[in-house]
Length: 186
Image (cartoon, rainbow, N blue to C red):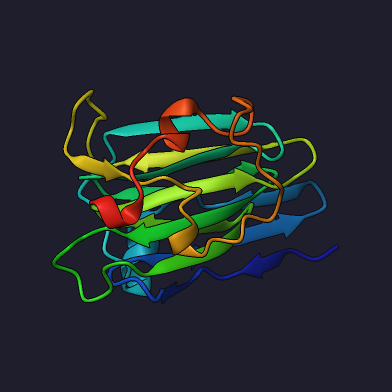
């Protein structure tokens, strides 16, 4: 097998300042190496990046499990390390020209989203074995930090979650997320 190199690509989404990124990958007989993040590569694509990442988290979520919608005052780079997820993003920045816009992006290994501060991030694990979801933050998360949370089940948002959700099942959605305010209450 010859070495197969897939270049990185990026496109701005319908939410101002939010980017969908396909990372560079190199595949040979042994498997694939992917660049989760490289400052120079993002710069070449025109994707703005913070000076540094201050915290990196990885979650494992059961199939059908939902996390979010959370819009802290920090830049996030999100993607999956294994499995797949249905990513949902809501512009909750009142001063933004795209305030209230919802964008969904199917996430598989090698696809990432750069989420600007104030844009809510949420996802549902869609692969049978769940997913490993990675978050890079440009600031350390602190209890009570600035930001918003929006109920991911708010019917006014029109989100069509791909798997059924039982909002009384804590393995599918936390009580905190299920009781977050509706978008109209912000």
